[in-house]
Amino acid sequence: MIPKRFRLAVGAALTVTLSSATLFAYSASAGSGPEAADRATVDTFARIADDVLSQRTQALVEEQPGHRNSGPSYAKTRMSAQLKKDEDAAISSLQSRKTRLAALGEAYSGATTHVAVDRATVTGGKATVEVSEDTTLTYRKLRGDEPATTDFRTRYELTLTSKRGGAWELTSIKSQENGPVAINEPVAAKANVAKDDGKQYPDGTPASTKYPAPAKPKAKTGGAYDYAAMTKYAEKYWSSYNPAYRKFSGAGGDCTNFISQALKAGGWKTVPGSTTDYRNWSYDGPRQTDSWVGANEWAWFTLSNKRAANLANVYQTDVGDIVQVDFNRDGSKDHSMMVTYRSNAGMPYLTYHSTNTYRKSLASIIASYPDAIYYAYRT
Image 1 (cartoon, one colour):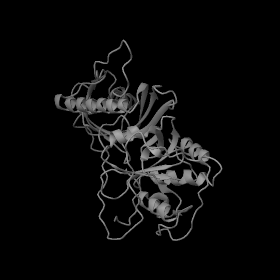
Image 2 (cartoon, helix red, strand yellow):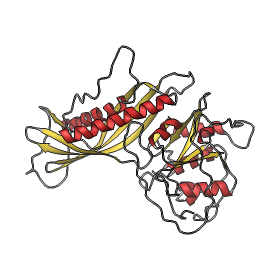
Image 3 (tube, rainbow, N blue to C red):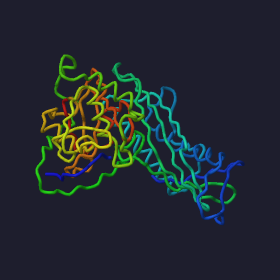
Image 4 (cartoon, helix red, strand yellow):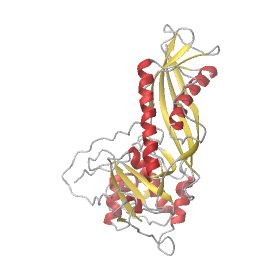
């Protein structure tokens, strides 16, 4: 039993200093009100964030023959002893994730990370910086039919302190997403614990995560739904938002809103009615049903209306199918994703919002959250 509530989605600290002749540092006696950082300072903040996040990304990339990765260089940064230790532990965690993925037949041959500063303000000697990271990882062709890349866009907030001699010390870097961690992020997302309201709902059956899975072929054509249209929609809007719909990134997460849009694009019919009755599913301009945006409510609608059936194993999912996750095992689903590609080896690749992600393998999700509860839906 789980609560009837509006659950939209789910969803390393380090110190860095950098000196620069062009750095626009603020002293502790500067004005108390926030001020926008100048161009040179913004560029410095971007380089600091890019260096740290690029090091994380590279920890996942397979070493090339004849080249040995000696570990993090932090070429543009200088860290405090304790926080450098924390970040080194994070890199070690990501390298362990790479090893787990290799055991499942997945590796990355290259990667690029780009960081842009969205907003930077300075108050006295303190700076708050919002950045966006765009990363592309290239799948190594181990079996031959892997997708070309997996991509994601995520946001962080950095806090920095001005030091003597025109240096900035980075005191924290925190993700601003409430969905699954990005593939290069070592810390698991934290989901709120839900309280049981004592009522019964069609929750569905958890799926096994054992790989490989027993065959469960899906008829992709000739039925009521257009799975190619679902995939095309999801992969068109994975990093953006269709202006025809409102987004819920700041209200718990956009993940279920996103899969509802894709399902509708593929032929799912709306069921109008009371917005709080999970047996209804619709979006109508200024309002929508709870089941359109809520992870739990979507599952209740889907199962009670027989729109989809639970699969026994999450690796049985195919294009247009949905995977949901209960990260903290409290009985309340936290996140929704759509399969937009499946390899001949039986690996589903997921596309979703919050964190905005394109063709991330199911193996990489499970490698990040091995203890979560997973649900798989054949649409």
